[in-house]
Image (cartoon, rainbow, N blue to C red):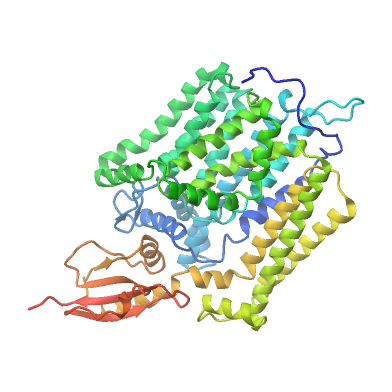
Length: 584
C-alpha cells in the first residue's frame, strides 16, 4: 500500500459544480427530517416504548433505577444507561412545563423525545465538519484543470460536506430509528462524533483525542460492546502502518484514558449495587456475539442493501475509484469505520437494524467522495432515478390513504382494512394540509431540477434527501393515526387497567406468563401496571399466541378468566387475565 499519494486523482470538478448550497436548505432539511413523526404519537413496541419505560422507572424512585436501567421490577440488563439518563433528565426538567398543555403521560412522552433532536444535531454537525476537514485536504482535491477553473479547497470541502449530510438524511434504514426513544439514535450520533474526532486529530490531535475518548465511552454507555467495539476496531485500522494517524498515535492514550474512565465510572458502582443486573448484562454481552453463521450472513445480505440505500452503491464506487488512495485520510478514515462496523456486524449473533446503523455514517461519507468522480451523464441518470423513484413512493402513499378514506381502489382498500380492523376512519385536516404542502414542495423541487439544470454536484443528493423526506412526511401526517392504531398498546392497556380496578383485591400482586418486554413496558407506561415474579400471586396475565391455538384451549382447573383482550388489528397475540384459586 502506498504511503505517498499519487499525483493524479479520480476527482474531476469545476468551480461551478462546487457552488454553495444555500444554508437555509440544509437547515430546513434537518428540521423537517427530525421533527416529522417525532411527536403526536404513542411509543411503539419494542425498543421505543422500552426506552421510555426505563426513563419513567428511573424517575419513580425505585432503588438504583438511575444506575441500572429497569422496566418496573424487570432488569433491562442490556445496552447501557446513557439513553435512560438523558431521557429521564429531559422528562424531569420539562414535564412540569409541558403538563400545562398536555396530560402527564403525553407530557412525559413529548419530553422523552426531545433528546432525539440532540442526537440528530450531533450526527449532522459531526458528519458535516468531519467530511469538510477531510475534503479540504490536499490529497482529496480534484485534478487541476489545464486552464484553471477547478474549485478551491474550501469550496470543494464544503460541497462534499453538504453531500455527506444530505446522503445520511437520504439513508432509508435509519429514518425511523432516529425517531425512536431507544439507544439507536445515540449510537449513530457516537459513530459520527468519533468520525469527526479522528478527522480533527489530523490537525488538532489533543482536542480530537479528547473527543474520540468521549465518543467511545458514550458508545459503550449507550449500547455496551455493540456500541463501542466498532469504534475501537476502526481506531486500530487507522493506526496500521501507513495510516494517516500513525505519527500521532501517542495521543490515543488520552482517548483510551477518557473512554476507560467513563466506562469504569459507571461499571464500578453498577457492579457494587447491582450484582444480579451486571451479571445479566455480562451474559447479554456474551450472547450478543457468536461465531459467524450462514443464516445471519444471509439475513445481512438480504436486509443491508435496503437499509443503506442509496449510499452503499456510491460507497463501493468510491472505493474503486479511489483504490490507489487508501492511505490518504479521506479514504482511510471512513473506510476504517466501515470495516470496524462490518466486522462487529458479522460477529453479531442476531444482527438487525441497530447493528446495521453503525454502517450508515461511513457509508454516507464514502458516497460523498464518489460524487466528484462521476461523469455528468451518470449524475443525470441518478437524478432521474431519484425523481421517478420518490415520485412513485409519494403517489403510492397518497393512493393508499385515498383507499383508506374512500374504499377505492377496492382491492387496495380491502388489504388495508385487514391490517387496520376496528380503526375509526377520519380526515385530520391540519395533517392533510401539511401533507399537501410537502407534496407541492416535492413537485417544485422536481420542476426546479428539470427547468434550471443546476450545475451544483449536490443536486442529486438534494433530490434523494428531498424525496425521502417527502415520503416520510406523508407517512407521518396522512398515515400516523393508522400507524399509531396498529402499533400502540394504549387501548388494550386501558382495558386491562379497567379490569384490574373491577377484579383486583387490595394488596394483590400480578405475575405474568409469556409476556414480551415491549408489552410489559407498554402496560407500565400507559397505566403504571407493574408485574412481579412472585409465583404465589393470585392474578396471572398471560400472553397467548392465537396462531398456535393457545387462546382456544380450555383453562386449567382453578383458573378463572377475569378478562381477555387484544389490539384490534393484531391477529396473532391475545392477553388473558386469570385468577388462580389454589386446589383444596
